[in-house]
Amino acid sequence: MGSILARMGLCLGMMRLRMTEDKLKVGFYNITGCAGCLLSVIFNEDDLLHVAKIIDIKAFPFIKEKKNDGELDVVFMEGLVASNDDVKVLKEVRKKTKVLVALGACACTGCIPAFRNFIQKENYERKVFLRKLELRDQKPVPIDKHVKVEYYIPGCPPDKNEILTFIKDIVLGKKPRGYDKPVCFECRLNKNTCFLDKKELCLGPITNGNCNSVCINGGLVCWGCRGATPDANFETMISLLKEKGIKAKDIKDRMKTFVGLKLPKEVIR
Amino acid sequence: MKAIKKEVFNRLISSLIKSYEVIAPVKKELVSFEVIKRPEEIYFKTNSYFPVKEFFFKKNETLFRFNGNNVKVPVKKPKKKVLIGLRRCDLNSILRQDMAFIDEDVDAYYKKERENCVLIGYHCSKVEDEYCFCGSLKLLDFFDLMLYDKGKSFLVEVGSKKGEKFVKRYKQFFKESKVKKIDKVVKGSDRLKKKDISSLYDHADWEKGVKRCLSCAACNLLCPGCYCFDINDKVEIKDLSKGERCRTWAACQLRCFTRVAGEHVFRDKREDRFKHRIYHQLQYFKEKHGVNLCTGCGRCIRGCPTRIDFVKIINEMK
Image (tube, rainbow over all chains, first blue to last red; front, side, top):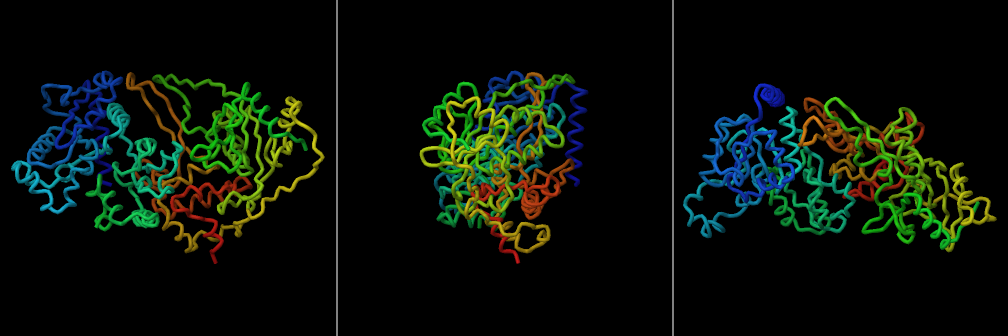
């Protein structure tokens, strides 16, 4: 309840802000990641100039050469914490901004870089981390393990329309609406054939959608990059996949790929 | 009864395509209702996987556009439609949606799509698969024309004044038939044995279904009767005071369906959501409109990833 009130207060705060000042001061930052999520923002090519009219973009790698940030209202943070520098940047940014938004699977759930958590250290250490001293001692984790995060925009990469809708909502002082329909919802609307009926390892039923089932439309199964739905029925999902003849290890590895750190421990053990 | 030879029927369709939007089952990987361009596209062999409701109750409907406080309702005149190959269950689901959208308070958007359309059925000669149970639910004769497949030709039953007018208008294609009456019973379709489930709400056996439910909402989206919707505003990035209010399909199997302001979720438990759908289908709608919402097409079972057969669960309840 407390967090709900805090969020409502936050929205009201933003509305006031809109009235008293011109535009929201927004920063886009990245720590360890492929920068694909920031590209997703830029992929709104046709609307980008309009976006710049309604918010004041204070920092954005690729777009702005110089960061001119100071105090900020909203920060979109891409990437996960995987090095000491990441922690430093993240904590500094958190201090500067009123609202922190985790942008993309790395920031929200750890994504593929966090898969390192599930591998024995001896198997990878010698290949990279003994040679790169500055990378050695951070456990790869999503950003909310280090700082408070107000909103999450998941996906690898996140959907460009979802980012745009989020920006419109905060500018209007609306509370961005969380999305928790499974991928199957949009997949059935798109009239796809169910991959589970073809005995393939698709995580659609337990994965958050709002991606317009883009992978399945393109003939690929869902890997679960947007995280599990709030009431995902893991037990039945796993037993169903096993009934289809898929090995338990393959199921667990697939579930861990993008969101392993955010799954209940008993599911991935 | 009238009769029409299949090759003549194809000629009729070809001429209809010129002046109507002709919608019929088409087989791609799965069978679904589509607007067709040639009569050869029609696929009669199996019932469609996806429901026909999307042509009336749109997946995404703009209710109005707004510009500040200025509101404009889109004025569009839908094309005249002929729908072909609707099974008895599909036709009855259209009747159910008419009850929900037209009979009490008129939903102008739905009604506009339903006007000016001719419904031509295709009678099932046998049950589709182990999931059908239309015979357990009292379905009505609701069609303009009904086709009965007789090998090289169709027997045609006229079911309404609109159907009569249609046959008159295209009389050169139809012949008189000597057949006066036809057996409409689909053998083996009476699978649901318990017709009244009102006393079973707290039965422990529901757990069998709840446990297997992934809450993916495939059942809602494939149901030809489900008519719940969500409404959202979409604003334009160029001018945030401009935009449109849209109606999209909703699904009662999802938590967000009963999520209200303040994040309270009325049906938070999977069990409550699971039972709600079945009770709406087999009881609540009947209490209000006199007939079941469910028409026994079996799509929700056929399309369920775990094939939860609620008919079997109900039958096995002691």
